[in-house]
Length: 305
Image (tube, rainbow, N blue to C red; front, top):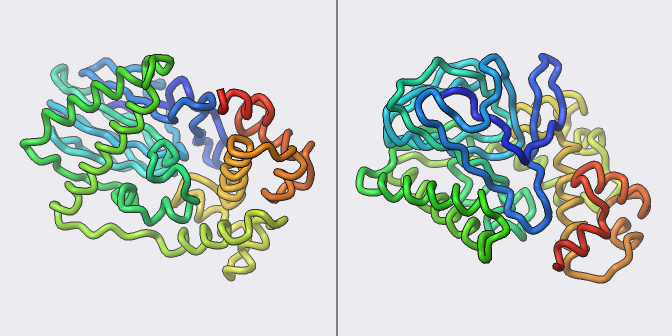
């Protein structure tokens, strides 16, 4: 399988020192951050040039429907076997594989955890240890039970249809329900496969500090000092293991709280800034605009609409 590509709702977040671009999910308010890519033999929807290596800060679940194929992760070639699920956690470097057999068919679902209703109201620390995401603690190869393979193709086709028409009545609810169903099935398949998921202990420690202190004027350096690391080392390790730096996680947590307060309260922007670790309303507005591509006021109106 050739490289899975950031789709139309991905934004370049940064470029690593080795030139690898890192993409983040970017979508309009109210639309679940989920998209589906279909690979059919030599054809793949929205594929980057064959020499384009990239990473991303969202989760990807690959399903090989038929004919096998391959994907390159962190420089290693991972063969895809028919009926096999492969989890790709954030931060992995994805490259191009060899051209696929004409009869090969595969799917890739890209999403962020807040697309799952059970995870939407939880902090990132809870995401890291949640059973629905436990299979994403590393690259995992999980055979789908033979009797469930036709169901997987049906769910993926339905999810692709719903994400292609986000303005249809109930499309958001259907998208979230289908994604949840697939993650439940994945968790059950992992359990049947006899593997015990684990969560990186350093990642959990970093996210615990972020959760405890995001409303304060905390920095990467202060988080690193608290954990006994240098800021540069911790930034590098977190980027490699999660696809995001410590500052990215701090900003994500602050933005999640800002979005919640915008949607659920009538607090003025200055009060929201004070509760989310930003200096003032103007600074929050600038960071919100850079993060979401819109103003907090417009986001509030759209979210409530």
